[in-house]
Length: 102
Image (cartoon, rainbow, N blue to C red):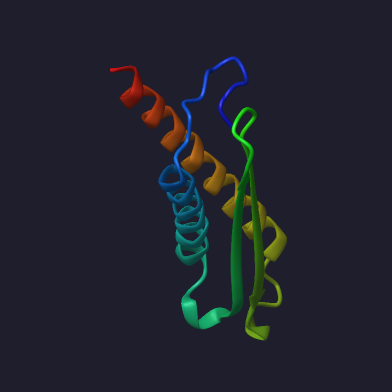
């Protein structure tokens, strides 16, 4: 996440909702870029935002692929999807901070 030394702006409920949407979309986009939809049996992406200072964001990805994809490293895919979600949240928070400085 954003460095603890960086001052985060106060977040509205709309900002928090946007953080959840951005993280979920980033994780889903990454997974879909690696695995075709028809090869996904089940996918559930959960994003939770708690607190404000510090801001705690948790991203959980549950992914089950088709039996045809049994040799695919699902855990590696999930880990990278979570990383992409956090990167997207960090970028959003940096952008929000810059907007509020103006």
